[in-house]
Amino acid sequence: MTFTIAIDGPAAAGKGTLSRRIAEVYGFHHLDTGLTYRATAKALVDGGLPLDDETLAEGVARNVELAGLDRSVLSAHAIGEAASKIAVMPLVRQALVEAQRAFSVREPGTVLDGRDIGTVVCPNAPVKLYVTASAEVRAHRRFDEIVGNGVPADFLEILADITKRDERDMGRADSPLRPAADAHLLDTSEMSIEAAFQAAKSIIDAALNK
Image: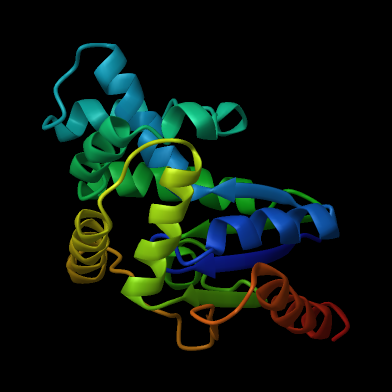
């Protein structure tokens, strides 16, 4: 029987780093569900296809190979912008949620991170974490990451982008970003990744030992 860990939260809260660490330590499969939307968008862009045809986008979404998601390629800003346009389409979301659910039952366990894992994709997951941080802290992290890679960045522009993304994610009609009723909240505003991992580990270990 598989063991599923659902991790949700807004952009740059640290859920991706935390999810990958948890998957590595427990020997579980990991899926960044946001990359499935980006992969769909990239396939449309690469094929010169429109981003406003829901039926066409759904067909592409159903053919996304979850095993071949390349974070370095899919993290491009332009792909993120394209992904935001198709992520609001109900048919695309339905197709990708089905694929994510199929992934979630892989043995011995899985860690899925995204915006609607605990509420929509895996509502029965034995462990649900909602990882968050203040918008200012998240903007500083994103700023430091970009500058650390040798690319100039504007902090206020990043903060505005994160705020806009939060409003879009939390305000959408289909699968809005919100904590599941039984999710454990982890506010990483003043937490190191190690402290966040240890907090998550204690929750996971307790669930595994039930």
